[in-house]
Length: 277
Ligand SMILES: *[C@@H]1O[C@H](CO)[C@@H](O)[C@H](O)[C@H]1NC(C)=O
Ligand SMILES: *[C@@H]1O[C@H](CO)[C@@H](O)[C@H](O)[C@H]1NC(C)=O
Ligand SMILES: *[C@@H]1O[C@H](CO)[C@@H](O)[C@H](O)[C@H]1NC(C)=O
Image 1 (cartoon, rainbow, N blue to C red):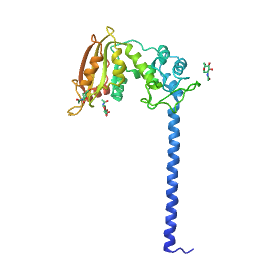
Image 2 (cartoon, rainbow, N blue to C red; image 1 turned 180 degrees about the horizontal axis):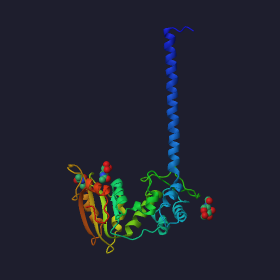
Image 3 (cartoon, protein in one colour; image 1 turned 180 degrees about the vertical axis):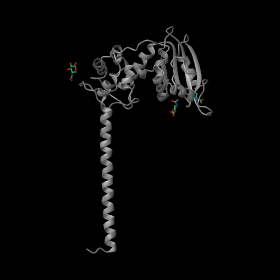
Image 4 (cartoon, rainbow, N blue to C red; image 1 turned 90 degrees about the horizontal axis):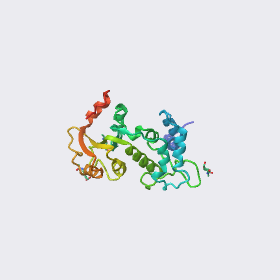
């Protein structure tokens, strides 16, 4: 069939239109599928809990899961106080740790890379409960009248104080600080203006629970950058606030340490428990 110039143009335009619509549809379908997959992955608390729990020996993961669920099932989203997790903490007590407790704020990646290599220090996320639930985006909650664990429609961290996730971390942090003994270390971020905010778990809970004479000292390791004009130093007022929260009988020290020095300790870990600073 003969097709004139305008006919060809029309055909081209129709073809283009079909192609555009098909592309848009494909993108929409992919986006929906992707969201569903992500939501499902995020949603599965129980498999994550068991898989991660099983990497630790000496724990009854089923018993821990049961104790975990009891904290929030049959309760409203925003009505789970930290005490609700007492039975869970009792089922997996944090062993008293002398001179190894490592607290942190705003240094999540670096501190965990460091404690992974340097077994002389332990963060909450290296203990069984901290490890099991330290998964980005993992959320859970219950509902009145149900024994199920929900993962959709749960409150966010800042939505209410007594939400199930926040209360878990509050309770676990409290248990971790309670178990501290001897010299305690805290790794803070010296690249930012305020290394410790009043609403951080460190200030709200951990520092206040360090108790003498079990705990002798708290050493702040303030991670700074070489030749940097921005950031904070040990004289910063937010660090003075930490000192104020601390029991007077506990010694306080602050040390500025260049990040590359810590990175070196991560790259070539020492066998002895000598510090990196
Ligand atoms: C300090 O905080 C900044 C900004 O959030 C971040 O980019 C940097 O990685 C942190 N430094 C350390 C040592 O964690
Ligand atoms: C929830 O579990 C408890 C204890 O196992 C049981 O007594 C109760 O009937 C259950 N409730 C529902 C709504 O399934
Ligand atoms: C130090 O701390 C105070 C108050 O906690 C904060 O406002 C200030 O900006 C901080 N940083 C620097 C670099 O001065």
